[in-house]
Image (cartoon, rainbow, N blue to C red; front, top):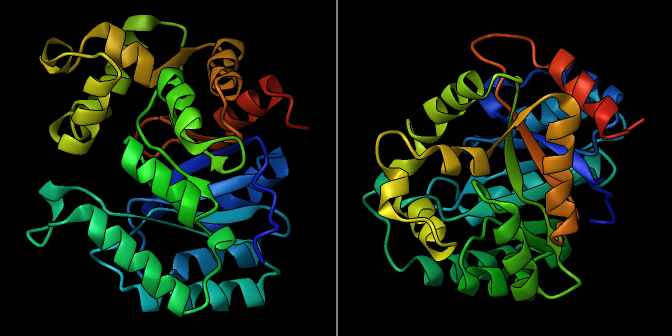
Length: 280
């Protein structure tokens, strides 16, 4: 398995906000992969429903949490989904955050053990990717998986990650997007998510520090410069150029997380972005 083509661009969306109808619409727009975010349940029933509704697009997890889902359960879902849907499932797994579990300890050793158990269950390296930010886990992703799926990063991180990974492994960063030409309004939308969740998580702030950002950039909801780096905003053409900056920096694929606000239908925005990216 895992000859699946993830395409140059895909989408990242919380599993709670994904529906079969939306998956089919995303596929029809020309995107290559749907990354199911926010730690979907270990049975991966949501992936089953999205695969059943589509014909071509790859469905990937971004990510299965290693603390919440035993490797054996993830492996069983991997084999079942790929057998039923022609190899269109990609298993993304990661260690999560120390703030999220009291059991968080020896994270690197836990990742290695999880990969060992996936090996024992017959999940090929080519069928899995790692959530990886720092150099040590990026190197592990290159050695033991198909590649890396970094989250909350910048093109500069992508450039550094490519250097750590080497030329062969898949590099598929996530990038947040707001389609709004008013900078203040767009930053407010991005800041609500970035500051509301991610600037309180040590894995992300440590990675941003490695990229040269300081504590001053993390205060008061995040500096404008930091928000601009983490949330691409503007008209579709401007946003497309910012997404392509990851490709230019060494990414093979970019997972677009469109912040459309509330219960708004994301398909119109994804459609205009697909046109700017020339997906069809």
